[in-house]
Image (cartoon, rainbow, N blue to C red; front, side, top):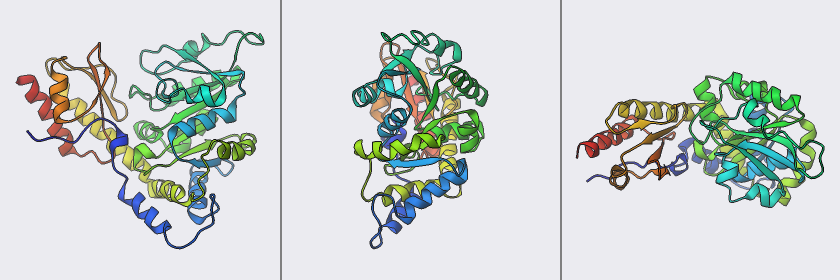
Length: 344
């Protein structure tokens, strides 16, 4: 039996050749340390070309750091973050926001991973009361952990609601490229123009070796972060290698093309299994994730051929993730395996 390409995570994908080439090109001779090099400066310039000349950009190693530092820029320890129960900051960062920032996460149950003003508003209580943490940030994942995508109108409405109540809006953009590609928007149109205050820009899931960025749309927030990044142990001495990765991804729209390929392959996979007996799509396929309910007995047999994660064991819900290097042949072979196991 042939083992197929896994559909476990876009983190499992290799780095894009253009990113590797950029790192190799940066590895020639000496360069100024701590980000004062042409590659990091070039990446910052590309972000500013896409988002505006006044944005502040801080490359970091990983997504947890990007999220924690974005939140640190926005709040004080007695303040709180409103987020979905399924949010990455609440489930997959080992309590890093709470431990490092001393803040509290106010989680909200959502059917599709998306917050709304009404859902977030349920956590807007105890204002001005010293016995209660004070809500200060609304944090959303775009795309969400359930593979759904906020529409431009939904994100704008959430931003407007947050700002009207004196709150900031943070976007965990580990997959912001997938969201932008799904919406047919550029990076600015998908973030800043919708009222986002801080963005964790994801590169690693989209072709980078290991590079993310804290992007702040309010210049007054940036001065402290220069020092906070260092205290958080996220200022690389040889930052040129992270800068080169981000520079390569933002060059000529590579970040968006990579995400578009991943999204297209998720749609192809969903279409290939839709209607099969025993297979139920449980979330809309809007980015690069397919959430399906499968017969429990089928799951281990299928995992033995192409590994993927079980999202909810009790409900037999699985997550199939595609990435920039997922091909149509990969999808078709996996879909054929699903059909074969169902028949067998």
